[in-house]
Length: 110
Length: 120
Image 1 (cartoon, rainbow over the protein chains, first blue to last red):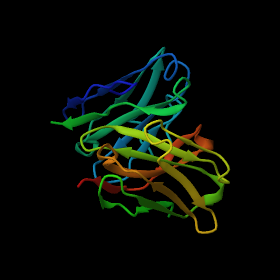
Image 2 (image 1 turned 30 degrees about the horizontal axis):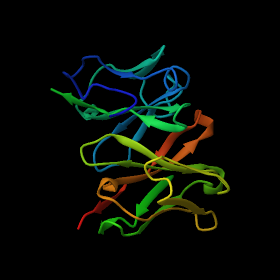
Image 3 (image 1 turned 90 degrees about the vertical axis):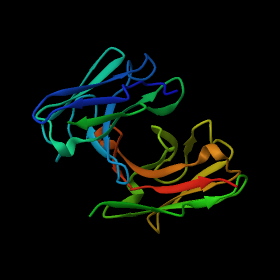
Image 4 (image 1 turned 180 degrees about the vertical axis):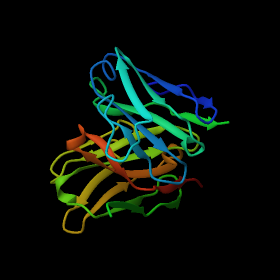
C-alpha cells in the first residue's frame, strides 16, 4: 500500500488532454516538492516535472504539473501515442524520512 | 553522454547475497548524491537507499535496513548495493538514480535497471 496514491490507469485519444492525480498527506506532498517520472518498462525512468511544476530541459511543454494542498496532478495535452507509459509521482516524506513514490498510473492512448 | 548502467542482478536463493553495481559516465560522479530504487513485478517504484557525494552518510528504507549496504567508489565512478539475507520480497528490478541538487533534488538520470530474483 503506497503512502502516496495514484489511479492505476488513465486513458485518452490522440490530441486529447489527460490528467493524472497524486494524493498524499501533510508529511509528503503537503510540505515538500512533487516530482513526476515517465517509465516505459524495460527502459530508464525519465524525469518529467520537478518542484511541482518545473520542466527539465528537453521535456515538451505538453507536460505540466501542479500541486494544491496534499494533492498534485500531471497534465498531458496534445496526447500522442508515444506518451503511452507508466507515470509515477514522488515526494520526500518528513515523517518516514524517506522518498515515497505513488503506485504509478498506466496511461493508455486509445 | 550522461549514463548510468546497472549490473550484478540474477537469480539467488533466499538467505543469499548479491552485489549490484552502477557504472556512471558522462558527468562528475563525485559531485552527486546517488540512490537505489526498486520495482517489484507489477508494483510501483520504492526508494531503497541513498549515499551522499563523498560516501560519508547513507540512509535506508526500513525494509532493507541492516541487510543492505550502499557504497561508492568515486575513483571508479561506481555505485554499489550489497544485499545480504535476501528474501523473496526483495525480488525486483533495481535502478540506480542520480539526485540533481540543481533541480531541487530530482532524480534526473536513471539507469535501465537490473533484475534480482530471490527464489529457491
